[in-house]
Amino acid sequence: MKNTQIQQTILDILSKIAPEIDPATVDMGYSIQEEFEIDSMDFLRVVTAVDEIFGIAIPESDYANISTMDDMVAYIEEKIPV
Image 1 (cartoon, rainbow, N blue to C red):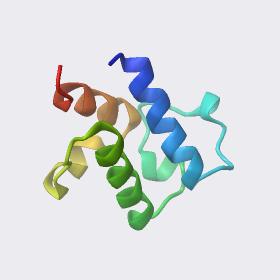
Image 2 (spheres, helix red, strand yellow):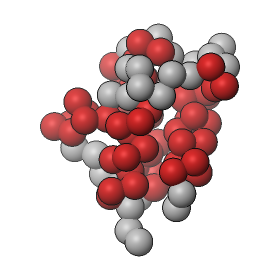
Image 3 (tube, rainbow, N blue to C red):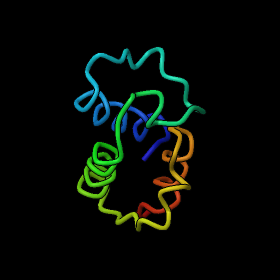
């Protein structure tokens, strides 16, 4: 799966949680929680959706490693089966 496909899938997930955000204006290097103004429960919903869509479990200990869009895309690329 390509980087852009992963990014678009994550943006789709996030736009369901924070529909007021324009995906075209998202700063890929900025904190997802701050960019989308979501709380920890909403972030957990994002992680759960990523698990369901990509088939990868993200342990809580890795949450700090996926705080930005860039980080999350890279994490998923690394974890998804080839």
